[in-house]
Image (cartoon, rainbow, N blue to C red):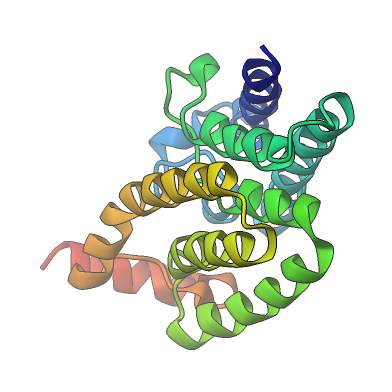
Length: 211
């Protein structure tokens, strides 16, 4: 029962999707524009940088909240934070309130890591910023970040259940980003430089998409 409640807390928080809500207030479904995902990066593409930053911070915060609430109510479960945070990620990716079509879980992954250990979060954040900007693709970050965090968690805790949960989440995140890697291959995936070279990036993507 405690495990089920931890999972439900996380999944409930994951279903709260600010990208979808903001886009609806602006009169459109964010899943039908840009990259087609209800997350921070597509919010930047379809609405703007300020809205994208808000969405990212909200998605981080909801995973932190889910993790800490679960740990508070179920302190006897060693993997309470990880279970609830992971289910928040899954709730963000597969929200029942949005017919299981949400975002891709990067910010909520960050929130799960932050709730587990702020220092690990900071070190991984620095590493992933360097990696992401050096490769110029956002999709590299969640895939590598989820795998690296799983290994760090296993080394620091020795918890097989939490490690198994994170491993499953890593596989799901990888699966959700296969389309991004296909777009990288054909030249239609947006670079991180979209943030300051929007017009050039849109032109490049359209050109490659028409070839």
